[in-house]
Length: 323
Image 1 (cartoon, rainbow, N blue to C red):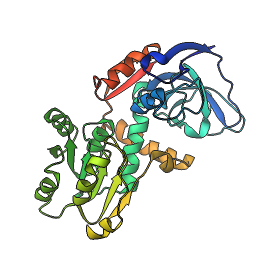
Image 2: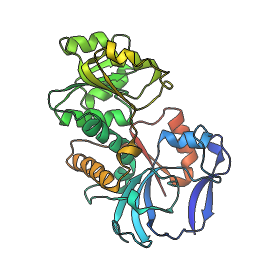
Image 3: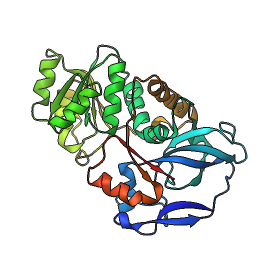
Image 4: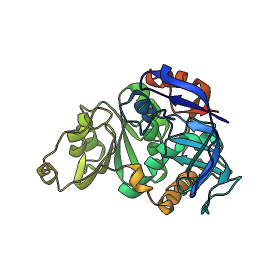
């Protein structure tokens, strides 16, 4: 038998129950893994509350983890029993053991421990595709990063600095500005009111080739106004709500701009892309250029306490659950 946190109905943290479940057998193309650490993400709260619809009930939430392969099903060649692995994506993470498609697993290098592996896959691979593929950041590029003190933001600040970019981090408080600067932001702007003027001053009027915006509705026009002609806006989140319908003529009027709404799933849909994305992430973390801060750990059985801490903004950096 295995153990898992399951929810039978949507609601508050109290709906998460620590239960016995049969240990699943891996089917064709699947692997069975024993979790050593499970990542905590805000998307877990969305599935628990019902904001994101559950595929079925009872549901095991959690989309990120690291552990050891116990067995593989027929046709699996990319991992084998005994491999240290990590993943991001498929639901089912809040469990001691689980099966998942083997082509969603990547091997975890010895230089990276399980807690770090579990904490960095979703946010780290998001930072990778944004900085290396959505727009390929080059040395000397000035870039704007919204929510620079958030999980993805702190990784992006470090990684972009490592690439030689000039990072303009946008944050909501002086405390967060300090955190962003400590992680590589060269300039910080608190709030959005003066952002366009600040970017103009910092760049000597040239503006920036790319803006990474996870805020959405509240910052959409401001972000476009920070771009140089032919600049790219990557709108990859909607913390303030979804962007309302937009007149495409705006993009022409503001300088023949490019606009994309990317998501990680598309960028890692093929196993080869997943492996390349993860390898790039592992390399910058193992080198020390990007540090992943696991600032809180909870026992998996105490996942409700972890959710309470997350929702009340008591956590910083990454949080992992230990089975």
